[in-house]
Image (cartoon, rainbow, N blue to C red; front, side):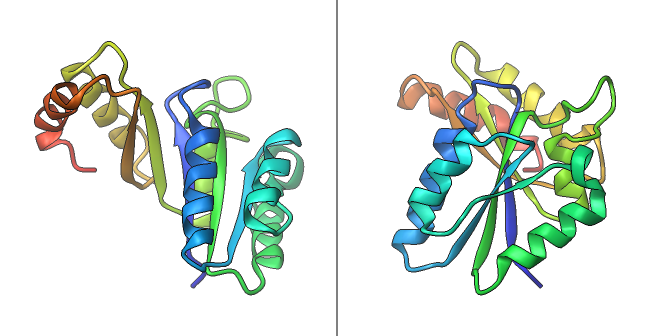
Length: 170
């Protein structure tokens, strides 16, 4: 079984690229062969992934490639990698029109990959728990295994959010 994670956000601008590159760099520094991927046709972020991982980043686009094409590209490029790290696009469920076609969720489902959700919590505490709970329950075929809270204002702010997340199953 090929290990993989999809780094997705609640929306654009939450820090997906920064978090994805940080995870790729940390895993690479630990001696892992990381195969980077990017959801959609973006060509800028993949150049950064390639520089960090020392392997060409590949695009995974269910609109252009279909689900089977995404799976084939993922597996063909994985080669000797220890893990595939997929940077998502826009918000997790944002696809073509009102569907999930070409969304990060669609790619995650196509690959059977778990999702790490990046959430900008600036200016919220308990509302972050409601937001995360909504994302985790919206589509039962999308497995959110973790959350990265971005823009936490202080240790007190972090504790308030941790307390609020107590009952949220992620």
